[in-house]
Image (cartoon, rainbow over all chains, first blue to last red; front, top):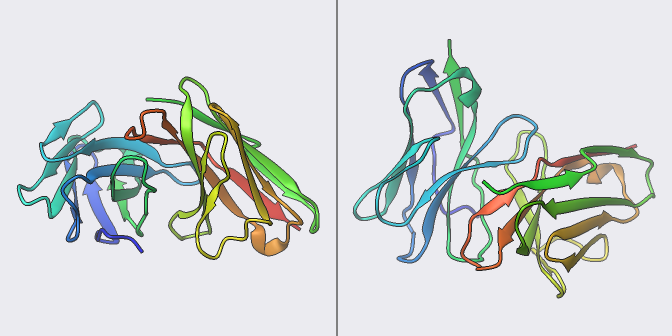
Length: 109
Length: 116
């Protein structure tokens, strides 16, 4: 079973920042937080990951709370192509990824 | 990011036949590859984990004799669905992880299987 919890769906206006929350109530100290997204009928796409510090790359920013019990993925300027199902997960090393139901993000024009 | 390919992208077969799906890491060597299955409107479910040169580890409820996995090289893993039936129709996705064991998993584009 998935260890993370996410809202089932969210809407965001095009051009605005999309903030997707994730709860990690049972995360252990050496597990990384990973975010992937899946656009319809495609394989999941890696977005970003982090352990303790906030991270930013060309796709998104990741905010992890100090107690690591929650994280937020931020898409700073959402476009229609960002419409997808977003998954947060926790993994240590070569462990398997366990996917929950994710958040279905819809970007509206 | 790293690139993972799958072949074929879609396949239609008759009930009782076997289907082989290939997963390749194109620009990195993958010690570990994972195979997932996804039914419509559901999340990805891990089927098995394969390490190069050793037997695959199957998740509970996945029949190892039905879903044969071979990981003969650091860039190729294959999943063979033997004696396929309509209930095996699904979206099959692989992921690959680099040699250092702690690296990011990258996913292939998926293979859609339809068994008639």
